[in-house]
Length: 593
Image (cartoon, rainbow, N blue to C red; front, side, top):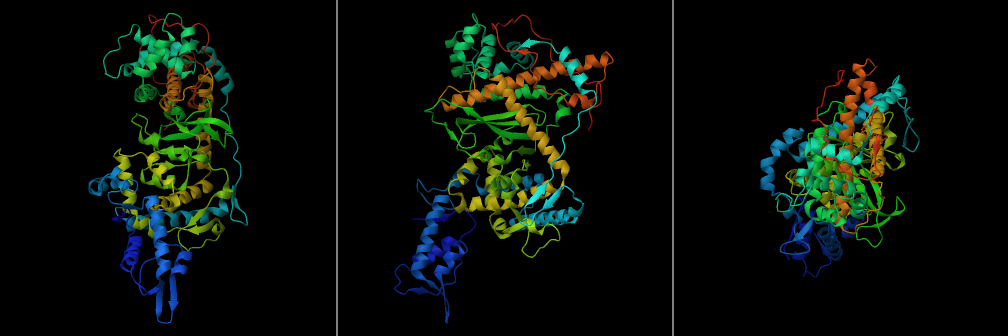
């Protein structure tokens, strides 16, 4: 077999060559000076024998050691067999390094990254040394942080932000002036403003050959988005479409890509208004998963340990201005952090976040490393400090106040050696050949033995330690993370209200399950667009009447308001009563920068 390496580390192949050259030898010990860095210290003590004449290698022990590590490396993808089917080179899915070299200079310049492994490792080490020194110097003044004898940090709980004066009266007046409308009318208004249903249609791209196509597309989005199903939707919308018609439109005219295109239209229209900029600048996104029940005997369904129920996970990315950016459906057994980066890299919107918040489930060391090289700032919410590890930049470095935090060191040689392997993966992701979730899913299998996993984990340890140092030393960072992650919890509650037809996804088809959660997010964005348009009109009318309005008061509102939205009754669509054109009027006050 022709065995080759997928990484820059050739020590295992060199040891294999020594074994093969001496496969017919009769002597028990070999006088070879080979690099055994691929093996653990226990393996090395088993192989290396110190004699009076010098260092010798136990030939049989070396054979066992090398073949065990070769088997592990083949399984992990660090080695491959030329022409094999099962153990082929996974890099065939990646961009060839010759193409990566042509992109490397511009990519590194855009992100401010050094262009070699040694320079990159030294650069990251300097950042970690500077950050640890700054936190150590500021420790006496940090009254919210304490470190116990075991090295576990403890942070005081922050007080909730004060509510602006006059908020209760302001919210009551806004509520009184909001118009009452039905959810179907909101979808009708949204498609009138954005024409998002233009993306729906036959696979051929031809115009739909059905009567009242616009009404029926709106009804399909409503029925599937609210989880009513085609039968119940048709039963309550007599004369518009039958259940068979709704099923056919969903199956033939609407797919995942078309739903995402429709969401893009709604998000871009939402971003035209000034009001959402009071809630967030669109520079941050929040990711979180929520449990979705499924019918049993389902290929994607399983019993979730954390939720204690059968089903799957709807994984959402929302912007800091509340709008839903990306939604996908994943099995319960998948680590949520695998999908955390996909939403931002698939993003082709006017809202372009570069910071990503998540809960404790949404992060891990390899994810931190991958995010760093993709130019994404990962800032998760931290809960259990007992499981957190801080990494020292160098064994020789000691600190006056925070030394007890650090329990392990960074392997800078590993990062420098495999920098090219990491950049080939990163540039392949940037070129659209692979998604981060595909890579992280591969690394989650036999990951501890994969060199690619190990180097991303090592880089992630550096980046995660930098984040943790900032987290424990900056109260504003903690306050911002808590405020942003609260928004995703409100969004999950909002989706529960939207899917009033029932929490259970009835289809056993993986494609339909993915479409189901995207339908719900599409309805959510349509409601948010309608709410923002109405709230803008209400705030301007209040200002015209001389009532107090201010950025602080308006920032306390939410596009998730639903007290004036009707969901039930006999459904009808009056297509003659269309709204006026969408007009993102300026607010009566200056948006603070």
